[in-house]
Length: 369
Ligand code: GLY
Image (cartoon, rainbow, N blue to C red; front, side, top):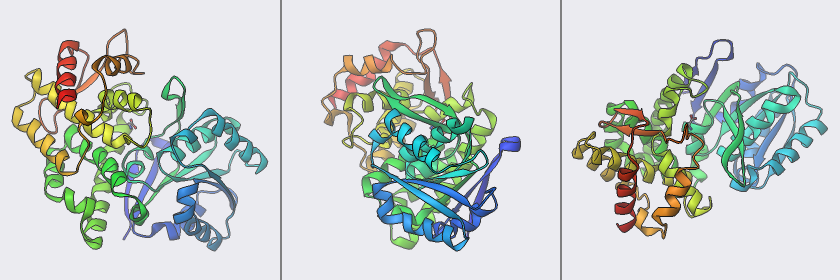
């Protein structure tokens, strides 16, 4: 059964389709959106091994001709260099203004392809087929696209909404457990922002969602992915360009980005792991500011501990370096950092009135362990 939700953006609205083995029918969902029966698939070497043949077969079944470009796997592919390679491939393929391209992969491929689509011939359509949990619940929805630069992550990019998101939960079966836990942090985030009932549901079902028996985990994942996509769609529909409410989706990210930057953006600390650690720090900060009850902080900490999120004290980071990274955050405005803090589970809000002394104190405690 296919679950559906819509990102409501007027004449740029699009559907998110979620299902088991839906990748094998992707062509039939895509066909009606194409102006002519041709497209370009962009993927990476890992996803090409496991999933590409399924998408290609589904396009062939619909008589959609396609070319495929396979890029190296990993964060380094989200670069100006690979953007150029991709744009040249698009030009060689003679893609026209009314054509669309397909991003098959995780957040790196989705962000890169979305950005290329936004600038090729001043903008063409693209379809997201996310294959990691993190991309399925966050990066494939909402139209943030871009590449990294030596100065930092996602500093060059655009808002460009996809025309369709196709989420096949069976693609998660080939992911290693750390990547599942990393994506799971972004799911927990939606409960903590504004949905305490969803957080309760995750407290009950989270461990089975991560590593339960096949039937159980597929059912729980599809439910949680739908819930996450609905939550994100509602926020994006209200504030597409992040002038307000969308910034709530950055819960844990001001801390998390600093941790990732200090770790050099390598596989030693995955984005979602950094976000989970950042969410704990955001709740510790809120508790220290006497805004969040200690009981809520403990529930958040316990929940992440059960998913084996790494501890801040297990990294040899220094307070000074982390603070330096935080003050380079692209969301800094007028010399002040915006934090997402919480007056409890499901009660997050934006604050520019956080005393850096409290930030230092929670980081110091976390680093000591
Ligand atoms: N990942 C946060 C956002 O899309 O706004």
